[in-house]
Image (cartoon, rainbow, N blue to C red; front, top):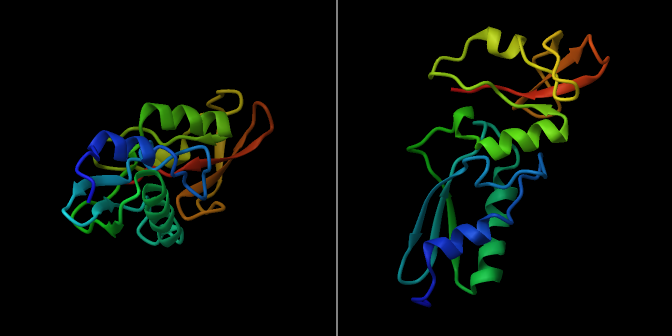
Amino acid sequence: MDSTITIQAVYTSLEQVMDPEIPVLNVLELGMITDVIIEDEYLLIKMIPTFAACPAVEVIKTNIRTTLEKDLQVPVKVSVDKEVQWNSNRLTAVAKEKLRNFGIAPPQKHDGDVEIDMMIHTNCPHCGSENTYLRSPFGSTLCRAIHFCKHCGMMFEQFKPLS
């Protein structure tokens, strides 16, 4: 394998791999990459899904592999890291701002214990109001809940806080 490939080059390429369910966020902003290992014969990327039963895992793995192979011209293996569990604190500040701009309320930061109040009380990403309520804990994907803002009248989704 080309010995000039750097970890930084891998991370730069990974910035292009977007989440198929939230296309404004890449896998780095979501905190999905747990390790990059440059082996003699290939690159090994370890990743974690944002939700245990995330149906997009295989698509994300394929997108990581094809993007890196195209950009870096090396064989790539992608595996799910079973040693690390994703939690919503892994979202970067940039990711949270992008979620808001996309119309999704970002999860609140937590200390490892996710309280039901964190899902019930969330600010509207459209107007910033706290005058919202939970309509359903089940959104368009497993990692989202549906809320309604009494101030601006908009329905919106929240990225669920997970520990």
